[in-house]
Amino acid sequence: MSDTTLVLLAAGSASRFKSSVKKQWLYSGEKPLWLQVAQRFASYHPFAKIIIVSSKAEIAYMKYFADFTFVEGGKSRQASLRHALDKVETPYVMVSDVARCCVPQEMVKRVLEAKTKAACIVPTLPVNDTLYFETSPVDREKMHIIQTPQLSHTQTLRKALSTTQTFTDESSAIAALGEKITFVEGSPLAHKLTRLADLKHLPCIEAPASTNLVGYGIDIHPFEPGKEMKLCGVTIDVDYGFKAHSDGDVAIHALIDALLGAAGMGDIGELYPDTDADYAGADSAMLLTDTLRRIKSFGFEVGNVDLTIMAQAPKLLPYKEAMRKRLATLLEIAPNRVNIKATTAEKLGFVGRREGVTVHAVANLHYFNWKKLQDGKEI
Image (tube, rainbow, N blue to C red):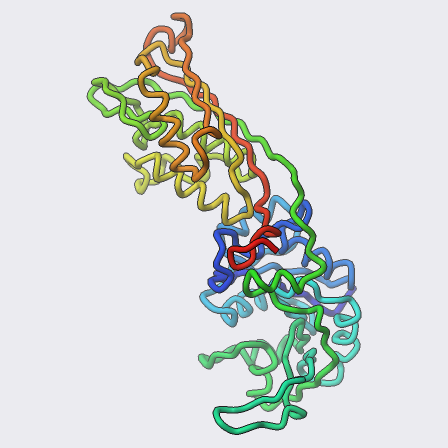
């Protein structure tokens, strides 16, 4: 069994990436970036365990992709690493950032082979340009560009991080203890993905696959007298609404389920449970907006949606165009990619008896095409 655990950090907010998609969820082919990185490292070395550190919401989704060990991150890189170390049982731990997505196998091998030489093994690159500190030049031969993955003695790293002092990487924390640091040759391929422009320097990332992902949703709500009726985010002029924990917009509820189904993200009850007081009387349009934000952050874009509303009452023909435009605005797509169909139940069943409404929805998603974006320009 290996004496080394791998920790991959992916809990950052990626604020400098400036995209609705979190960089760890950019798709390379059919895989999100974090998964590609984890599987790449797994192919390099038989680690005792691979720990992925991310946010609570992302971990819930990540678990559908692979059986790694997942740990919720903290408010800083250092706090996230401390959380991960609680799960490390091996004498050595290798730490890298998911944002360094093209780390070559030879570089990892050099780090592993040097593990007995110091408390922390650090891959570095030489500085090729002239350097100044404020207004004075410095000797670039004494400078190093620090990279990850870094390998540390687990106990030493735990001790180094048990402080309120902030460090930007493992080596600086361990150096502060006075422990020995050893440098090995890094690689230009281990370029860190920080901004959209960095994508040009990462040859291991493929264009996202052109796969279309289809989801289906259905919802049913009975009528309730004296309540405002909302359908597709549009107010319907009748003296009754829907019996529900939220505002009861049955069309949007079905649509949310269709979107979540296409993304493989569960259902509306998991995200917005009717046992949660925060969603009592909630505006379903706001729930759809939040669902879209989640879906986009996980690397998807909406292609088109199609809804069939089954209602004996009320009459919906006068509202269909407003419904189309309202959903298009909420989904941030063109109105021609939203289709609304309305039908009766020919007086059959609870719908035919004018007791309620049922809606069927289909949604189509595709992966965010980051290949066409770099600071807003095609690359």
